[in-house]
Amino acid sequence: MAEPETTRHQSTLGATLAGILDRSKRNRPDIQLLPEHRLDGLQVLVTGANKGLGLGISTLAAQRGATVWMACRSDGTEARRKVITAAGHDRVHLLSLDLMDISTIDALAHTLAERGVELDVVICNAGMVPVQARDSGAGLNAMNHVNWLAKPALLQALIREGVLQPGRTGPIPRVIFVGSESHRSAPPIDFDEAASFRDFPTSQVVAEYGKSKLLLHTWVSEFIRRMGPAEDSGLPLLSVHHLCPGAINSSIAREAPGWMQPLLKLTFALFFQAPLKAAEPVIYLAAAPELEGTTGTYLHMKQRKEPSAASRDPELGRRIHDLADHLIETRLRA
Ligand SMILES: NC(=O)c1ccc[n+]([C@@H]2O[C@H](COP(=O)([O-])OP(=O)(O)OC[C@H]3O[C@@H](n4cnc5c(N)ncnc54)[C@H](OP(=O)(O)O)[C@@H]3O)[C@@H](O)[C@H]2O)c1
Image: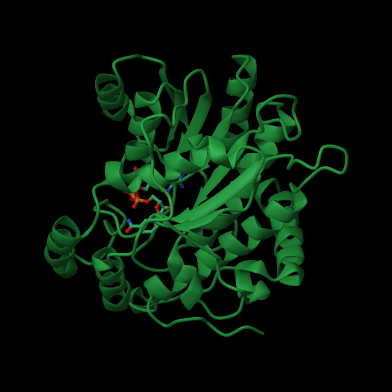
């Protein structure tokens, strides 16, 4: 079993320092979002679109010509207004989505199908960090549910409704997952734990977040293999990419204990990226013409990397896929 590649993200302090250090490195970027990277005429779905990175992604996508479907759990009216103002057009639509409630996932896919939408880009951005362990209502850890399991559930629903079409004629749809470098600090996947609710204290939250992101990146790596090149065309059925956007001045730590809030807010404001800036590599993955016909890019901010070796293990990938399918059927749809 592969041990963690690093211990940088096993505590709040460690993760915060790692975020600051990563931002201060002056590595030459491997990718650049250029003005010609456009999304004109494309239909783009963004989850967690009402704030933080999701709002940045929605804004940049709309500014680059996309019709944006902003999937939000909370009221997104104000966020939509901001995107319309920034983009100068109103091809910006709100959809309701609570990733812990599969009926809203199904309803979203159905609504898009009824409106005749065929998605060109799906950006699975929504994520959460609770203050301590929370049952999602399906006998699962809420963080694992939102940060991992709800993503396959959403994609299954979109594909079932024909809103997302793997292997369609024409440009290959792109699916982008927002993950985190914290997956490298996670211990080997405990499959029993992933399928159950286990209590943990506030001091463990950041380590547990890394575990949820390891589940995600392991699942994504397998999804990349499964959506890989078709025999006849040699092209992937879906272009699947994932990334860590780096530390962002967002509300991800909003549930942190009150005594931590002033320090976290100050640190985030001083050292972390603005969401619009952090959205650039996401939009690069969605729009860059050089990625047409490719799959499996992983970025850490603007650096190309491989995700952790553990997350790329095909046997673990097969098991995590099987587990996701099983949990969706037996817990989310029970
Ligand atoms: N912030 C960072 O430093 C950082 C670093 C690496 C990776 N990331 C990743 O970046 C992504 C965006 O996070 P952020 O920093 O922008 O955090 P954020 O400001 O807290 O935004 C999170 C978004 O996810 C939504 N969300 C949470 N639970 C949901 C649920 N059950 N159903 C539907 N939507 C839900 C939130 O909706 P509500 O407004 O309704 O809560 C919000 O729109 C996450 O995947 C996160 O793990 C963040």
